[in-house]
Image (cartoon, rainbow over all chains, first blue to last red; front, side):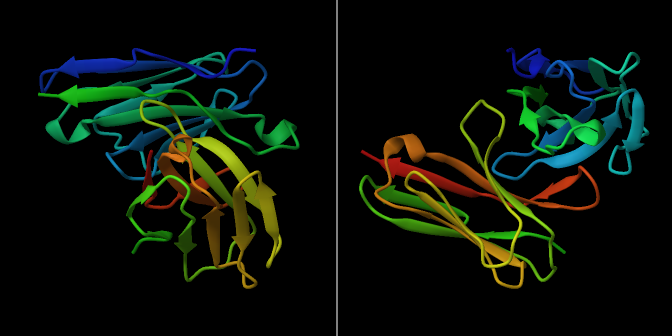
Length: 116
Length: 110
């Protein structure tokens, strides 16, 4: 079975440009997470979805970041406009969530963003 | 205020040596997870501990949850180069939400 898929793996953009990241979770996983990970640090939650509903977006900088999971399956995270400080790895994870007995998160490989 | 402090921050050892890394907090948690993350990959769950004083073993890795459920340790016996990576602890904050620690970056030299 395929794991969590993310694309692109790497992205280099100029500051003030927009950028979007895509995530396809493991089939059947209701919960989807977007994390930001700075170099050498632990992941920090940006937003969590239960199906298509964003149940926790308190850490998402809403002035420039947005996310969607329209059909409760794949998800897109967007930054517009990007700033130098947004350079980081953006990780997507999924879990069975509310309807499952396991709360194990499965992570994708991440998208490494460099803002110049 | 950092919820979870991990120590040491960096560790470089020779193959065959033993090591212990720690995850500490002033708060009590219902469960704690340990992950390993290799370069260019996402974290992979190693273990979940839920009972104070619990000890779990995974081959050469031994995980312990503190009696008061505020801290945890990970001990690796006879480290191998394949153990190299970023070790992260994470604790449950609410339902299906985890907060990650600062991480310990381990390098095992052949």
